[in-house]
Amino acid sequence: MTALAQIPKEERPRERLLQCGSNALSLTELLAICLGSGRKGVSVLRLAEELLVHFGGLSSLLEAPVEALTEVKGIGIAKALQLKAIFALAKRSQMLGGAAKFPVSGPQDVYIFISPQLEKEKRELAFLMMRDAKGAIFHSEMIGMGTLSEVLIHPREVFHEALERRAYSVILAHNHPSGDPLPSKADIELTKLLVSAGKLLGIPFDDHLIIGRHSYTSMWERGYIKKSRY
Image (cartoon, rainbow, N blue to C red; front, side):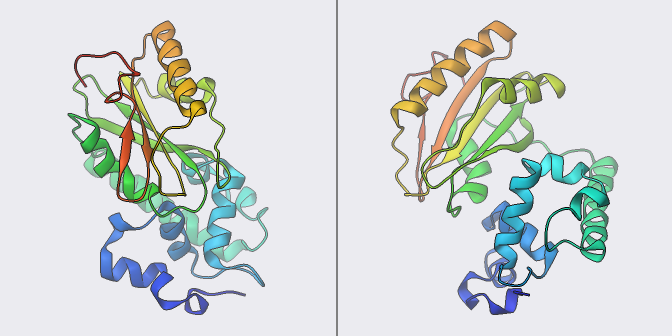
């Protein structure tokens, strides 16, 4: 079993949480802290990543029953129950205080909101952010996990979630593990496709951010999304 203590000190999620705060940690790192240890030959960070891939993102993982959690090698009953308890606390916190909203007036605000989840990831991830009528982000979730160089995203996944949660508009963000936020041809084509799909469904596609190392590219700023206001 590979525990957090066996990971190099500067890479340990607990130490990073203590030194940098929770906003500096990726989704994988936060989940690794909840797990505490991996399985034989597999680090806890790798196990956390496997969980997210297996369930297709955080939202599905949060809803997964104990039986489904234990289907992942390295997740026994005790660990599954521990996760369910943590997830239940998070849900009750939302019920008591209401889901927090993050006001957004431009790409820089979106970058501040989402970059902690993406900047340090070693494979491409895609996050969908949903906005209310006032432009605030009220929900975000991972909708894709890919390789070192690509993540496959289909408009169906983007707008299905938006329709389910009655989003007024949406923003997509994904990272480039290379650290270079320059959009690829595929990134540009995806942006155009999502703009068109959003028009058909009546859910504006506001922006597509590519997150690099301490930098980003906004497709809205680049002129690929024709909107006068953010």
